[in-house]
Image (cartoon, rainbow, N blue to C red; front, side, top):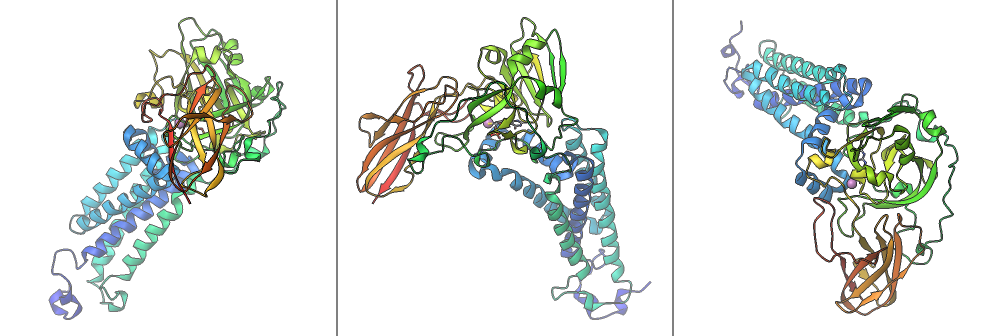
Amino acid sequence: MRNSATRAGPVAARPATNTGGVTRTESALAGVAAAGLGIAAGQLLGTLVDPASAPLVAVGSALIDLAPTPVKEWAVSTVGTADKPLLIAGIAVVAGLVAALAGIAARKRRWVGDLACAVFGLAGVVAALTRASAGPLDAVPSLLAAAVAAVVLRLLLGRLERRDQTAERPQARTKAGLDRRVLLAGGAGVLATAATATLPGVSRPQPTESAVTLPAPAETASALPTGLDATVAGISPLRTPVADFYRIDTALFVPQLGTADWTLSVNGLVARPFELSWTELLALPMIERDITLTCVSNEIGGPYCGSTRWQGVRVADLLERAQPAAGADMVLSTSSDGFTASTPLAVLLDGRDAMVAVAMDGRPLPREHGFPARLLTPGLYGYVGATKWLTSLRVTTFAADQAYWTVRGWGERGPVKTATRIDTPSGRAAAGDTVVAGVAWATHRGISAVEVQVDGGDWQQATLGPDVGLDYWRQWYLPWTATPGSHRLAARARDGDGVVQTAQVQGVLPDGPTGYHVVTVQVG
Ligand SMILES: Nc1nc2c(c(=O)[nH]1)N[C@H]1C(S)=C(S)[C@@H](COP(=O)(O)O)O[C@H]1N2
Ligand SMILES: [Mo]
């Protein structure tokens, strides 16, 4: 064996350790390369096996489910719907940092590297196996990731050590004294992970939404009236374009369901449980309704509210066929990804148009909004009445079952609170004659009036836009002569019973926000 003392120069520049001349940076890079390539291999395989089993997706989904409610609220209110890409990136960065440390440690003790791979692999396996509808195969991508990472780390460290026992190759080092191979491997690892991070979100070859043909509804809705948006600039359109419809869910990647193997099961405390295929669902009589959907996490004045035309099968028809048992008081709807919502049975049977919706705005549901079918319950926040990627309706009781968000501290019933939003002006306005305008909703109670207050003065009646029904929002406007300076505008609505919304300010937790929308406008 060559003794390092027989060589001068380059060797002397390296630390004299029992690490075979491998520097800290090199071993950190080896760790990053190993983790990066391992994760990438797992992502690739996961995408083929079941996108939910890809390590980053499985761990990310588990973290979403485990995150304490305040953390989730903070995420939604600060980064909005960018929360998911950021989560994936965050996991990758943390994995990279830990991998770098593990690489450094493994330089002297190889088993530390193996242990790190095993721990991360196990985390991936547990995350993947605890996802809804996970099969044993879902463990494989994380196992592969761990195995690849462990092997790559040992190979790289081994090669780096042997470097000093073979011919010296100073040309293989960068100015900083790094081995180019490990630099390249580290870069390759990072790139491979980045490239495969979003793979599971890419559609798999399933029939797309646009390939689905829907039957005409048995009961059509009347033509939507012309909204105030035809004349008032800056107001929310009466019908929200589907592309602009807010999206809120816990799904890291949109579930890719096909219609061929989709079924809806109606079961639980019923006399006659049954299951419907996609074709059988479409054969049932359908209704078409204009309904506003809003999120319990929509802060006063916030964007998470949308209104459109929906088509689907009445939930009441399905329940009537199943015959709920006396004593049942809740329907727990379940999504293909395990999300659940608790809808009061009485609400579903009180004559409102709760439906298993298959279309919005005259077209099949986009995947982001629940393709092929979702629940929609007028008058309830989305988290209790609007399960997307719907697969089952289980009749049960509030005493026996809790839904996804109820377990995490949100109200179990979630009726929508009366709310008003000032759309315009926002921020700045030119002096002169203008309008204050926006939308108000109190779904399933309707809106009877909207009042606007300028600079703490008298409440003035706004003019309401067309009435599209109790379940739909109402546009409104008030002419206003804006004078130079700073102005404070407030708006409040009265529901269909004439009850004014409360001025009491409450945050979104646990059952939706209250308070007036107040905006400050700089005129001039
Ligand atoms: N499967 C599933 N369905 C879900 C959710 C979810 O996280 N997963 N979120 C609910 C919530 S909180 C809301 S507000 C609505 C939003 O529906 P949209 O994304 O179509 O606007 O979907 C509901 N349905
Ligand atoms: Mo929501």
